[in-house]
Image (cartoon, rainbow, N blue to C red; front, side, top):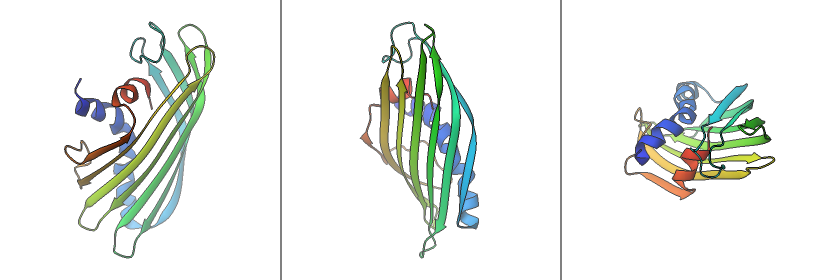
Length: 169
């Protein structure tokens, strides 16, 4: 699967927060907390950091804090911090804890030109397989063309192959 196709498939759900937040952010400056349950599955042999043939399924509670503000030049800044903590079970019966953290800043200029900086980490710990994967990316776009970034995406940290295969959230 091509890198851009994997980016769309795996990162787009996280970016959907931006689509839902941008119109609200344009209307006001504020603070919002969104909570909910989240589940995931990592199929067997998808993530090379897990033993061959081992799958992992988990569920946890998400807390996303969204802060928006209008800057003096009319730009809108949206900061999202999302933490998900929970438990997972592997196909061998091992019990694990996981933590997912995603932090992003989106700045929307009055023209619609937008910059995003995002840091993401997923940690699985417990008996047997333990690992962490993460990334730090930046990109720009003109509204409404959120994704995929074609030539303005900067990978600052993280191996895309590990991220797309082993970070289920």
